[in-house]
Structure formats: structure tokens, C-alpha cells
Image 1: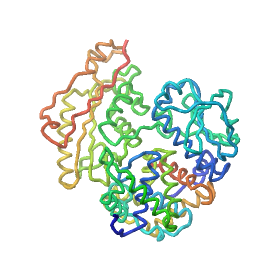
Image 2: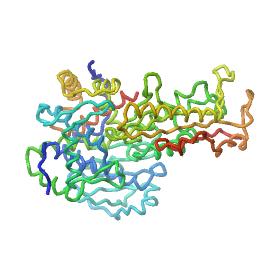
Image 3: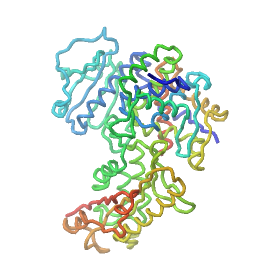
Image 4: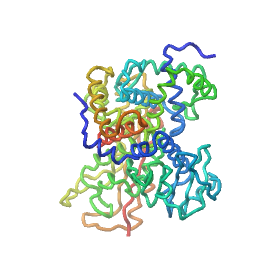
Amino acid sequence: MSDEIDYDAVARLAAEASEVLIPKTFGLAGGESLRNVVTTVRRLYHFFDPSYCEGRIIVFQVVDPKNRIERQGSDVIEARLQRDLRAGAIVEVLHNGGVRFVADPTLTAEALSEDAVVYEYAAGEERFVANFASRRVPNVVRGNQSSFALPAFVSVKDALHVYAESFVRLSQCRIFSDVWYDDRRLFLRVKPEKTMRRSLEQFLRARLRAQVMPEQNVDESHPVDIRVAFDLPKRLALIEIKWLGQSRQGDGAMATAYTEVRARSGADQLAGYLDSQHTQTPDVALRGYLVVIDARRRNITETSAAISHDDGHHYADRKIPYDPEYHITRIDFEVPFRMFAEPVCD
Amino acid sequence: MATPRMNPAATFDVLAIHGHLRRSIGAISRSELHLFAYLSCLLSLYDRIPASEWRYSFAATQFGAPFSSDLDDAFRDALLDGVISADVNPELSQLTAEGDEELADLFTLLTLKARDRYIEAACATSLMLPVSMAREAVGSDSRIKSAAALQTTRALLTSDWYADIHSQFDALRSSVGDASIDLLAPAVVWVRYFGERQSA
């Protein structure tokens, strides 16, 4: 089977790419300036989340040092970036590796771009400018303010914590938001597990420094939801997803409802997957992760269209008792992750 | 004192990849080492260098990723020699001060230094795009996908593989230009095209 390529699609990507524009404009030295500018942007965003910026952030490097203009400004101090970047700033990257603020708010990305590779961030949009030509930075990871402020996780546990808080709790993930039957997030659509799996899989693929594979069979008939392979792979993580709550058909009829019993059966299922996988790959270290998306609401009926804070959050911090407690009795079973998905309350 | 290497090119690549990725992602995992070595090899083909001159080969593993046993041997040797060391996170490794010195010495050998053009550009994709997208792009190769689906290992750099890669690179050259420009350009366009197609 051949891996065919769509010439038109490649041409479109090339036409949009700052990595193509900049060397064509400034030669190989422009490419080096692009690397220096991006390295600096990534460094700045290590200390400052650009989503908090109320102005515009410009980072530039003059490609040929002979064209550099000495401007008034001050050194960048990383410990002060939270304060110094909030209102926006212009940052120059020097060829000696230094980085400094330029204190001239009248400068624009276009004006600087005559001799420089210029990066600009404003209101969630990023672009590069070279000799007055501009290229938008593609937003390749959904839900991220900047392509250069992407945290990558080595640990599944760390990634799941961020997923729970940033994507599930308020349903901020575009894919995950499709699991709901109603705008108030009281009821789930029927069979929401496929959407939940896709949401978590996309998140882990983008953020985890490992091979993420969806729906992998651990034996001839049983697929685990997500499998993660680390390090070629000395370690494997199996992730099983279960949901709790009340689902509804498209026509409004009440459908499946799952209680915490479902979480316990998921734990049994995952323990079985781990046993099968151990048999298949005895030399690989395994870890099982049970993810329980908890969408339970108290006192809802077929006619409910709103919910009080008390009823909506009744299950928010409610622990699920497991029996057996695989996370205590087995060394390959992580403490189950219950991720509470909040409703919109009155 | 470093022990003699079985494959000097692989040894150089281990050190150079650790060195270049320090700029973007810091310490790296073993799978990232193999991923960026493979991308570097692809860029040398884009530059019309015969694959035999890469001086080691790759296979597709059952985990949907490229792997080179020569590179892996060099990685283990580098750890034993102390030119790379485990990071605070033991899954990751980084260059040591001795590694920096050894890399600088190896740069004096022109045959090895020539490889750095490809390694640097491959690693620089991690400045512009998430590493996960490079992983997706490489994993989109039909031979790598089938190795994962069949839970087996398949040789890469075979004749049908060359035919596919060269056809992909013809399309890239017609849009991006030839390799005399910065190789980061074709690298990023290739990674975006196949990475986005794979995750679509």
C-alpha cells in the first residue's frame, strides 16, 4: 500500500508556512533568526501564560546584526515576566544570546520586519512577519492559546490531572462538550463513551511524550480504550474509561443510567485486561488507569431543565468505594481517576 | 575514556540529537531519540542523499514507531560512558558536560558534521510543532501502521518505501523548493501534512 500525497494540500501548507517564507525572504540567516525567536518565545511562555496578556507581545531578531538599531530598553528578567508581559511588550533577541525589552510602543511588527524576523501575539492569534509579509501560526493543538506554550507530560498521572481540571470539569474541550444532551449539562447523550474516548485520546496524543493508541485489543475479543507505550516500550499503560450519570435518547427518552456500580465493574474489567496483557508481554512493566467520568446529578427527572447548586454538585467530591481495592492489592493498578463534570447550575 | 563504537554515525547522532533537542524540549526519551533520528534520515533523502549513506537502518516496531538497533546500542554505550545521563525524570536523558566535549570533538570529523544539517533541521521541527505531531506524521506511514496493527516488526527503507518517500518529496519540492534552502521548511510541511492527516 502506498502513502499517497495530495499535491494541492501540500502546496497550501507550504504557502501558509512561516518556515518557508522566512528563509525565502532572508536566506539561511533568516531561518536561524526564526529558531532564535521561537526559542525565546518558548522561554518567555515558560514563565508567562500568554492568555493573560492584555496587549500584544512582539519578539524579533534583526537578521543581519549590521542592520540593528540601538533602541532604549531594559534587560528581560525572567522572575518579573508575569508582570512585565501582562500589558504586552516588545522583546528583542540579540545575536549574543541576550534578550531585552524595547521601550518604544510605537513600533509595529511590520515596521520591524524590514530587517527582522518578527513574532507577534495578540488576542490568541499568533503570526510571523518577514519583510512586510505575514504568516499566521497554525493552532495545531485545540484549546491552547499559543503553539509555543504547550506543556508536554511524561507521566500519565500528571496528564490525567490536567485533563480532569482543564477539559472535563467545565467541559471546555470541544470534543468532550459533545457528550451532553442539554446545554445545562444535566443529561448525557446516549452512548457517550465513544466521544469521551476520542476526547481523552486527542488530549493524550497532543500532550503526552509517548505513543498513544486507541482501542487496542489486549486479547482476541477485548479492547482496552487507550493504550500508551513508553520508551520502545519498556512500559505500557492501559486506560479504561467509564461514565456515570443519566443518558437520554435524541428524542428525549431516558436511556441508560450508570451508578458507581459501573465504576466498580470497570475496575474488574481493567484488572482482567492487565492480566491478559501480562500473559502476552511478560517482560513489559504495566500500569492500569481507570478513568471515571462522573456526570451524576441529584434529584433530576425526565422533566428537569435546571438544577440547584446543591443538587448539581452533590456528587462533586463523593468518593467511590471499590471492592476489591485493586489500587491497594495490585502494584500495577493506579488509584482510579474520578473526573467530575459540573452542570450549569441556577 | 570512551569505549570503541560499533557505529560512529549512530554515536554522533545520539549526541547531536540530545544537543539540538535541548533547545526545545530539554531532556529526551529513547523513543524521541529514534523518532528524530528517523526524521533526520528522511531529510537526507530529501536532499537526494542515498539511504545507504545514513549508515544505519530502521525497522517499524509493533508500537507504531521507527527503531534502529544501531542507534539503540549507541544510546546504551553513551549512557555507560557517561556522555549522556538520566534526567531527574529517569525516563529521560540529557547530554553531560563530557557529552558536550565529545560532540564538539566529533564535529571536527567532516563526514559526521555533514549529518548535522539533517539532524538540526529535524530537531528544529520540535521548536515549531509539538513532538506529538512529528510522532503522528511518522506513525502515518503505512508500513509503520501495519506493524502496529499486526503487532509485528517490519523493515523500513525497503524499495516500496523508497518509492513512496520519493513521491512525497517530489510533491514537497514542487511547493517548498529544493534542499539548498533551510531544511526546516520541508520538514515542517511534511510533519504538518502527515501529522494532521493521521489525527483527522
